[in-house]
Length: 298
Image (cartoon, rainbow, N blue to C red; front, side):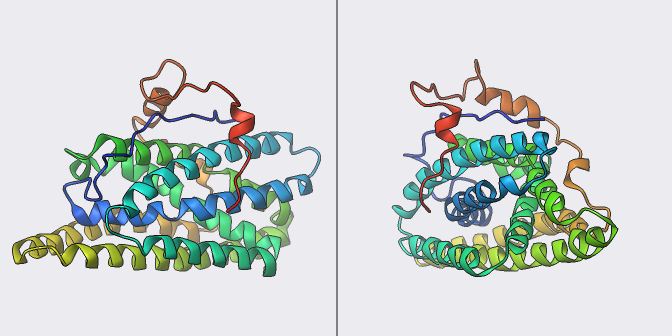
């Protein structure tokens, strides 16, 4: 299976930072949006440098890696536009958080093994495999009345993350998980290590960025608004505990494989809006998929 490269037509110029009724939900997603812009170009470089290490017979996986790179190239470009609009609304330090993450990733690339980099990448990608269900099956109450452009960014992105959810997992196992011994030591224990490392590293950044934005918000809030924000935080944390956390814990199962996840309802139909004839597709006058797959410097 390969995946089409889609070119969204989304306008971020008038998206407010508080684009959903639950401010904690919106700011948590805003904080998360700062992750793709450094990590996805980094991930593209890692896969491009390692793809020739795959055995000659893995042509299907090589094709999927190429399609994966095309999709990820569009992801970080769209989030870059969204983040620029967000920072301009009074959150200047977000750019510094983004730079620190990029510096961390560059250090990993210089000092850590390819096995670690791919295990970290698989851990990061496991977030997308979970977020598909969250956005399409469990977030309706949070998205009611939300800005349609911010919603489109996240639903398109998370739908594609679910679509290519197995690529990094399969890539890692193709290089390090073949054979009984490797399947146990690398395919399970080291994979779980990469997952835990990635979650602690990235969740740390997301929490710091979210807390920073919420602290800025509180400075201009009335007491009633602050009380509502605390209720928003509790409501969003409850959603996370009910749906996100239990799904992420499945990474610890020895038989975990993201390919087995059930496609969330409405996801495939939603992606058609970003394909030829859809209402959310941007026309491409030059370049195309080959151009889209060429990563920019981090």
